Image 1 (cartoon, one colour):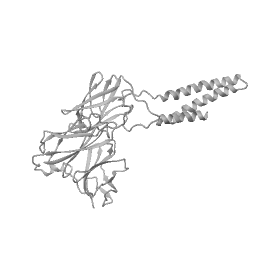
Image 2: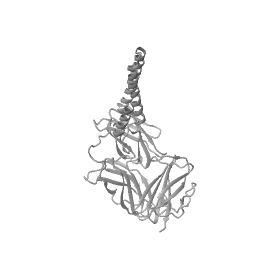
Image 3: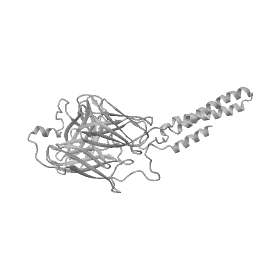
Image 4: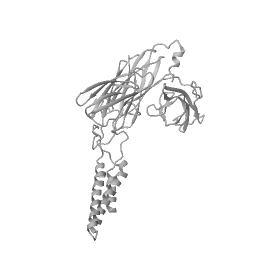
Length: 426
């Protein structure tokens, strides 16, 4: 019996394979950050347990978050349902089948088309072995007791009871090893290619603006077109990366302007977001994204804003200009860097005071974005949850030089950005 149990355990371990980091799982909510109608919000598509059935959509935002018009379309048969969602007022849309869908979100004259899949967990094949083994073991145990009662020698009862014990042992072993067992694909999951290595070519990008020459102080659209590095076709297989399809950081060359936004998917391979730059000059763009079955990627670009700077200096101050470390951030306090003179290539600790009650944003308590003064480097790290009213980041400045930095966190009032600069000596 011991040999039988060991053999079953060996087979289970041989069949088990670690789950990919970005496999789509049934039973999990889909959270997608969007910058739409001048507001930052997170759209939440709640997990569904049955199809046909209801699909609940919620929005998490700040006081300025607008109501959103929703249009849900099934890719398979084109069936469409409509609804409206606002903060505190979820929408309930009916879905008729699992598989690929498109959710169109509209507000303020802007539209985003979000592709996703409706998934329903159909259970694991291992459950059949667990419950089947326990059921058979129960029958055999009863049979063993009855056989022993009417058979004086008891040999038959011993055999029956031994087989029942083996069934219980196998079921228990599968329960113990369940976290390492390969999970079955949920209904509606995308078929995965077989016989080929994982990984897809890097994304190529073209960064433009509409209009082509934006003027200082006027609204424009920053557009990022994504192409496959091998085929040249639009890249439309982005996976959710830190609760967004893409993170776009835009800064002026001098670091006085900073935006961290989440562009809208307006067409296959096209991301767009509305911006307004208050001063003329050259602006640098950084796009963080990830393709399905591939690693993360940072894309860079640039555009130029023409016109004249505003006459009111207070207008420029709204651009979130970096200040020196230790400069007060309103009522929050001062930013500290330890050691006070950081060394290139060695970890430093950045502590940022906060005001208000923190709430998670993009799945994290806080974000630190660091850019080299020459624009050749961009780093993005997260705060994992430090107790108290301070955020603590660990960051390693790669080379000597000057760095512009922006720490961000969210409260019920909105997103706070704390700018500062760091000098790393040679």
